[in-house]
Length: 120
Image 1 (cartoon, rainbow, N blue to C red):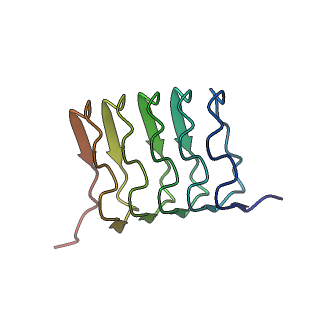
Image 2 (cartoon, helix red, strand yellow; image 1 turned 30 degrees about the vertical axis):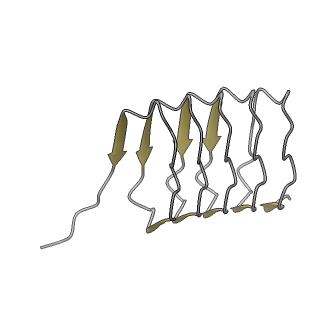
């Protein structure tokens, strides 16, 4: 079973327009899908724990990104220059959002960061 998508695995696959990441994948590597400009949406399943550095940078066609509830780490510039992205929900499982993770997402108008109960 595939548990990791390695660094630069699909970088610059400019004709890649759909993406189905299997439920067993736990790690999306550095620049794994960087510059896949034809992707329309990105769904990261609950099994994924880490979205690596620049993993989806310059996926300029992606209007929607769904981050699964298992993700705890979003790396540096992970979604930088996803210029078609309109809104995103960050689940409460996320503990770290890396520096410049959403830099230059020029159409981003709504960020919903879910938060769990503090118990107090």
